[in-house]
Length: 68
Ligand code: F3S
Picture 1 (cartoon, helix red, strand yellow):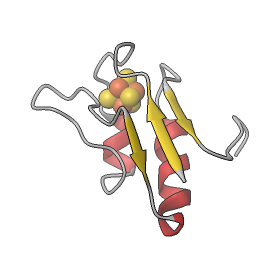
Picture 2 (tube, protein in one colour):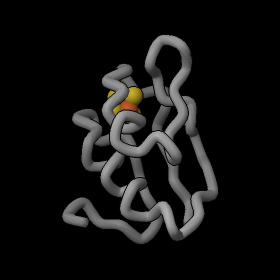
Picture 3 (cartoon, helix red, strand yellow):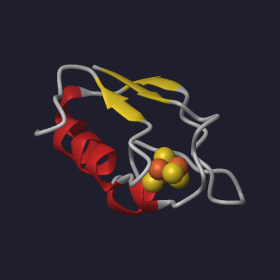
């Protein structure tokens, strides 16, 4: 599935990678650099956890709603 991050709107909370380190990559300042990535289905729950952990709501996971 596809994962997209509006990296321009990321402010560097780094919570996404804290809960989903296999999905989201941060730069040395803690900003998300995963603008778009094809993620294996086995990492879906991790990807969604990371999406929900972001207070800025800048992460989108294919097939997941806000309530997932
Ligand atoms: Fe950025 Fe949100 Fe992660 S602000 S570093 S995408 S928790």
